[in-house]
Image (tube, rainbow, N blue to C red):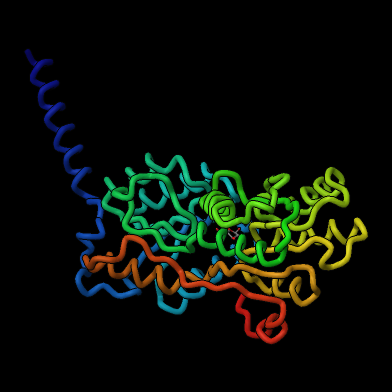
Length: 327
Ligand code: AHR
């Protein structure tokens, strides 16, 4: 009898301790942020699990988030996932545990985000998808802000059509397999490409200079003298591809190139005659994303899709514009 009473007493104490623990550190949600509706940037803890540092575009994107956070007084929790989705997911889970106010997610690939987005939603932490898109249901995140990758592909095809009016054979150096940028650009390009232009091969260079170079080397060997043009999904891979073309003894214009990004490196390739058109993709998203995050903290509605206004750059303006390029 004594043992039974002791057990019951201990069980009651255990329940009391457990319930005290669960209420001691409540999960602060965006809707419940104590500063709302008057939150300021200095109240914000913002998580940015960056996907990597694969390109000059990415470096500029990281700088935009870091510098803007410093200017505004936002507390930024930044990490670099080295192009690995599992690292991004771990970083997000850590941010969820820390109870950040808002997460900005630049997803390395489109698929596989449902579980962690659901965890963020259940914790009351809104997620803004930044740059590339996800295939997850849009009810799992607050907004997507970034470039229209399909439109970028269409613009690239329009330029290729003008460069090869009589048709020809081209190769494609694609971005990271399964990424929203690579998928959208490839689909948009094919949607607008003239029938008389044949894509003879397409391989990924993972958006890096180091991987773009061997891809172009292999193309040049396999299709010796047959390639008229190249659609290259970013400027860093174009830099690698041009290195391969120089080593193979090619001259600027032997293979016309349409690239994407509009980085300083891409502008230099246009000035040097290697790239004939560079489709803009703007990485400077920090200020807009922090504005959106603050609106969410204050319980305000934000647009569910925000597409960046972009253009196409050409060699005839490259020298004038290069000094003012921010990335
Ligand atoms: O998602 C944007 C793309 O990612 C940029 O075109 C590329 O340079 C970067 O790596």
